Image (cartoon, rainbow, N blue to C red):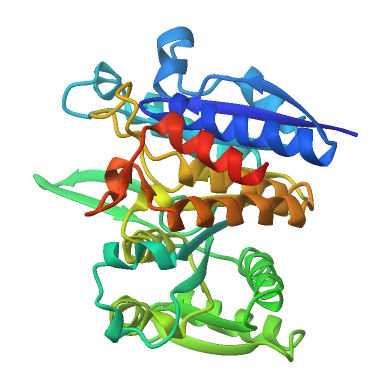
Length: 361
């Protein structure tokens, strides 16, 4: 069976890291007898340069026909890039937001896992977390403040702006089901994060989460206010399994959680819709300052490819092979610049990809 994968390398270091992820997928296909076909499409600044817009309708339609999309990163230095002289809806990041909306991707999965070999890179001393750091943040992706009505006006010479945070129960219920399903395959615990002591939207969120939880009696549910969760991620990150939260809270908390691993360059992500289709991308940005230097860390992109295999193609064995290979390479002491430490072996972007492939083989 042939699986169609759309590649959107994007800007900055995106093409470099997606090249390594594709090499890993090709290795998996050869070893396990799969057939992957690829189509590379432009997204972000590169699309602006060619088409005058960050994402074309043609690219959207081609992405919809694929089994999954593997993306690099979009954007550049906002101070120097001509892309940021354009209107906000024409800038690189607008292409990604449009892609998520058109593909109806409502659940963003952001794992944060501290590899044993990288414990020295974690900013929290080991004695402050009693158990391993291995959590999954499930963030609602298409509602809330980022997609609510907004406006800026001038009244009597005074500038005024508003943003609207809106959720309906169906939006909450569908992302909650994703989170509980994932928890069933992990440690069977969900921490739902909100601001129910202040916000009506959070009080509805909490009500719907409790209704969904009734269908998952094996899963332990706890509620936590977002400010407390931000503190708990630092003071006791080992307590978490699956963190479920709305769009803006998830945006902030997932970046905070990423630093527990020592480098955001290590972390993959997935954005899913109601089918098996997903968009997979590293959690980090386009890092234009190191683009083309061969020093970017491809691990997040490679692990995003592993998530693609697991969540869109139902290839758990193959995904495990990639993740185990990454662990073995790190345990052997190989490091890209962002995770380099004393007495370790520094390697390039391409060398890191090749090392992971050798471990898979």
